[in-house]
Length: 407
Image (cartoon, rainbow, N blue to C red; front, side, top):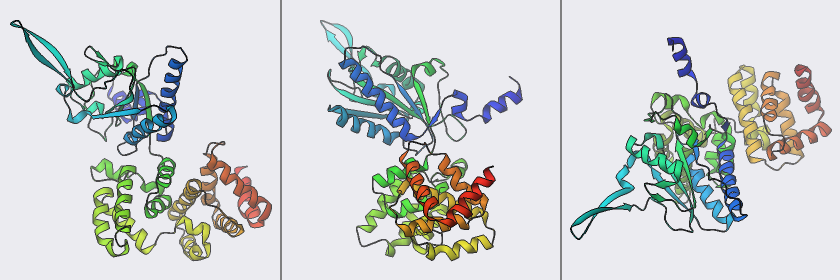
């Protein structure tokens, strides 16, 4: 292989090297859960089908571990069976943590019996998910044992109970992560590989459903690009990610339930810097304390309050900030799907009509990227249909201008 070919290969992202699809974390959860349900239902219906071992790959903190817990919990409810989960952390375990030969002396003769640890699923009629976290960072002897788990659903000569399924989790094998992957091409055929990237929508849907603190939700809605700080990650510093925002939400709720947040900004900034990094923590504190950023929620509900700030950005030709605001506004609408009256519809029409065509086009592009059958798309389409009928400024200054540019 030439130097140029080698460099081109190194520039490829891991999912490109594997030549697999990129999915949202929610898509992956539903695909795995659906396959397990279909497998069990096929067995119950008299059809013998093979279990599938899944391999989830994605950036640290994106929610890979959390969806495994959700899969086990939801399957227990949906199948009306006890569905357990065993999650092992490969980097901190060894082969001996799973299986140990124990000497037995009988009439002077020594033989060995294999002892299996609590990490190994037991119980003939049990169901569960066996999750191997950070498989590719385990030592090679452990990886060899776990290959058997993924390929044969057994350890040594002990078969897993029929109702146990296997999922392994890894970070992508690229420059951002330290991996110790075995050179075993057979590994590619042992698993069904699913790659996920960061999804602001998935994070906010989860955050809203789990009642994350409003400050966290609104900060990410206003600054979707801050959900995952890839630049800080590449530099080796602490970086914001979905998991760190969930921990930050818990910190805020603790203060909220013990006297309030306002008196504890310095402490919150220190704590959040250990989750997000110093720069991101400072921006977060400024957002929740001083509200220097234009909150998309205010654009929707209280445009008069923030309109002077928007016009100031337009006078300064601050297209970067305006583009960020439009991204945030789209994110707010599609994740919160707030209820509206004529007042809010007028706010939407006025806001979109104020924007230069390049910035306004961001709204159209974002909405166009939504699946046509999604609740988000239907929500925005209802707003669009209402405004087409009721708002001349929306029709003439926004919609017709976009159509004209689009050709």
